Image (cartoon, rainbow, N blue to C red; front, side, top):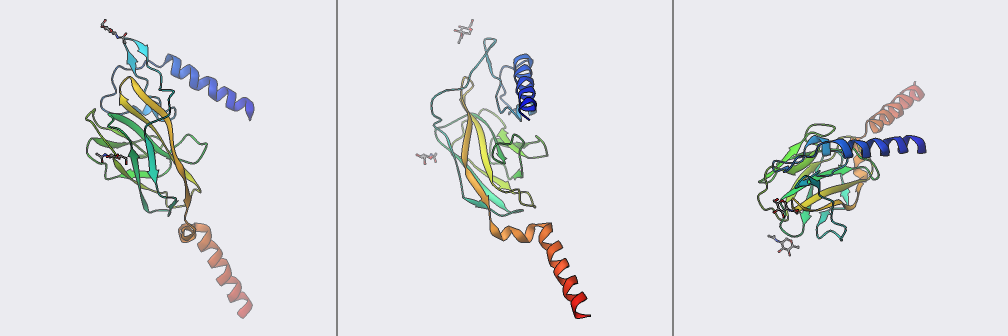
Length: 194
Ligand SMILES: *[C@@H]1O[C@H](CO)[C@@H](O)[C@H](O)[C@H]1NC(C)=O
Ligand SMILES: *[C@@H]1O[C@H](CO)[C@@H](O)[C@H](O)[C@H]1NC(C)=O
């Protein structure tokens, strides 16, 4: 397991080192950034590194979601130009759920699945935008929103995390297991009644 993680880490580093970054990203994060969430910005041919200071941005979200239902997610902080936001299971790198109704100057993009991530559509100034996330129809347990936010091309913060959002207990109705259990109970009742 540890060896696999090491191999993966080495791959990510190699890809990051050799993937030619493009100078701009004005029209949104490319899908090559889906996992690393690194903008890969270049300034005069030199890779721009993330800010090491505490992020002035935070991701504000409720503490529960219901499978198949929407949830509002807000990026709060100073005016910014670019971003990439996903919902992930804690510690995982692939997005879950989908986004809809993109606010002005933003768009949904395909990472693992269509509309699974949100990014900027242009470099117009944006502030406190609210995004609409739809949870997967079958619960996936806790999720956490993770973002990279670029105030400017050369000034960006990575790995901005929301609180962990719990799956609401009402979600049992959205679980196929629930209906399987109900069917089993009905069948047992039928067998016992015979
Ligand atoms: C980038 O290159 C331009 C033109 O050569 C120069 O004026 C500018 O200072 C450089 N910027 C940085 C951050 O090195
Ligand atoms: C964005 O949110 C911050 C923090 O709540 C607030 O200070 C600021 O006035 C808001 N700006 C806009 C344009 O809503």
